[in-house]
Amino acid sequence: MKIGIDVRTLMEKNYSGVSEYTLNLLTEIFRKDQKNQYKLFYNSASQVEMPQFNFPNVEYVKTNYPNKVFNLVLQKLFGYPRLDKMLDVDIFFMPNIGFISLSNKAKKIITIHDLSFLRYKEFFSFKRNLWHKFINLKKTLKKFDHIVAISENTKRDLIELCQIPEEKIKVIYSGLDSNYRMFLPGEKSDKLSKIREKYSLSEKFILFLGTIEPRKNIGGLIRAYALLRDKNPELSDFKLVLAGAKGWRVKEILGEYYSCKYKKDIIFLDYVDKEDKVYLYNLASLFVFPSFYEGFGFPPLEAMACGVPVVSSNVSSLAEVINNSGILVAPNNISELAKAMSLILQDKQMKHELIRRGLYNVERFSWKDCANNYLEFLQNIE
Image (cartoon, rainbow, N blue to C red; front, side, top):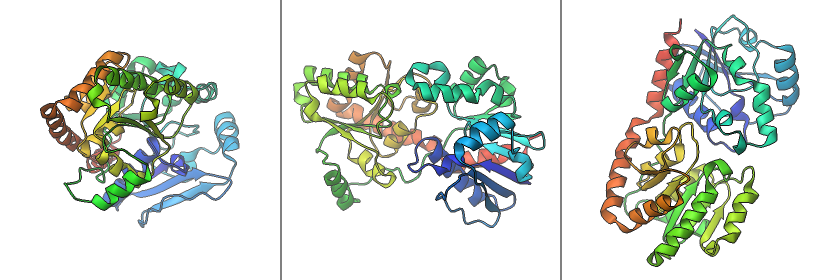
């Protein structure tokens, strides 16, 4: 069987979210499947460094148009080229939404990660909302024979917001990179010390990791941290570390920061190198993720795998993924968020119990299982 895959998301310079998902999933699929032929499509007018999949049954196919011309003019306006037909494949798979033109030649599958742009347009820039409008998700999804949702929450959103028949949707949970794990006492101590020094981290800190943007509720976290400090002077040693690239409307978040009386104890880190993330988690005392919406929510699981207790919001997919292994609160309830942070930082028994539950919970998510589920699904497509 010949399978075409749209890998344009792997052209990104700094991987996160969908690009990491695609890379991890495809790496595991190619390791397991040496029988089917895979053609990986991308487009760029310039040279782009793509991941090297050194398998005899995997090849790249590239077109050389400027991306805006390819997306808006060729794919959107003229419907050229029909990618499944151009690749001559039996199945065409898109790991994420994008501008696409397809024929009726192949069976077509798409993965949907989240529908935040339909639920919360206010969390996206005018340009991004315009992009989503041009994509026209409801119309795009009609081109596909099957849809993979990465969580039950995303499946429910597809049914409610896009009127997709339930039988057309398959839920396949994402995996978790095995590099995320708790270090034993003394293990990797030199590297941990270097990371602490590299990012000027204190001995005790509360960590958030993700894009610094309104959807992640960073402003709420800063207010909750201030409340925590107001009500618990004994926790003054704990800093707040906000790690991640700065996103849209970051000025609003910086406004919260500048008005916070504990701003000298709030540290912004920019984009953290992937190889550093596991050490950053291991150094943290607590991980907090008060996002308003997530299609899946990798950071809390990554933190759990590193033996860090988690406080998270109880909305979208987060309750489903975190289950009973973290403290879940309403993202708008700043008081409850501060209380949850205080409880974990001061109750050692609670902290150790959440660590135990978290390490157990992450066993539910592996890229091997994810790849196996995809391969089984692909083999049985009608």
